[in-house]
Length: 173
Image (cartoon, rainbow, N blue to C red; front, top):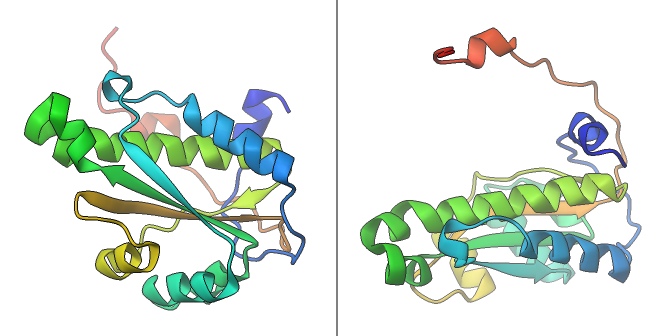
């Protein structure tokens, strides 16, 4: 798929078919995540891959009852590694750079999924501590985003976007 077509096609999908994701597609998504840019090339993030029904249900519950999450065949939880980033960048690494690393990686996952004919949605509303416990993340590992991935069972209308002039702060040419 053409890159700009991928950008245009990506939508937030909250309804998935039961079709499993092929291992080859998951591997392509993981390879794309692995080449995502990161602060100091530290890749200060981790990914939890969730496929077990019981674990998906716990994650949906910890995401304030967004039950559609558990219907996706695959969930990726992106986790910022605060300690890894702080080693090189101190407090700014802990508070910002590792979060940026995790969010860039999650975005690469979503765009890769779209390019492969899959659907996804960004979930940022969740109880961080409950998610940490479910995925058994140690201290210093901060869950940042939950990305359910699967084959779309819906095709919602495109959501309207602001005009470019509305998102520009200043045009300094």
